[in-house]
Length: 209
Image 1 (tube, one colour):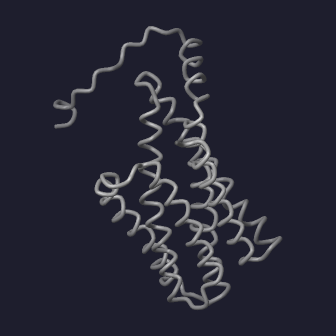
Image 2 (spheres, one colour):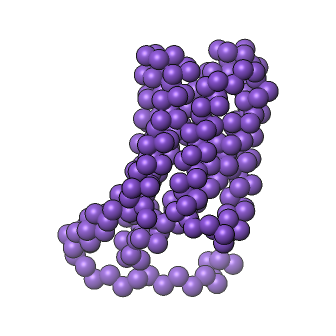
Image 3 (cartoon, rainbow, N blue to C red):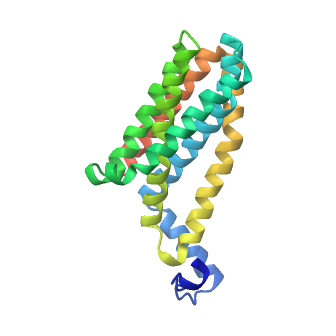
């Protein structure tokens, strides 16, 4: 049905390849675009480092958590992300996308600090849910704001660059946590990750206005 009913005309583009990349490069020089891509990279570092890669390690090392409990905690974050995303329309009706983006990075930092000092296994569900809320607020807003900055003819290039930040974060995140944990221990690593989330907040505060 989508194949036959969707009307999505291709934007006219007679530029040479050199002109096309020149246009993309010119648009990437925008301060807000740079801030959004940087925020996206830091988001994926925080997601794939302390949350996906190292939260199971922490739960096993501190609380000897069985696999099904680890999966339940991680699933609670994913479920919360999905539920929060469904309410994003209401949130953006009351608050600006840029304000929500700043709130999301504060929530990331609070969640990571809470993980660092949580004294018992059941209480880890709370920072996991908080992390899920932050994720549900953050990612759709980053994509929406980037899309708003991308000219129609350059939109594919913008999304590809954002995809590169995803892959870079997926690679850097676990390495970052491994280095931080080896140097500072698990508590120190999570506090450092919280600092990274706060750095993203400062980046958004300074560049995304």
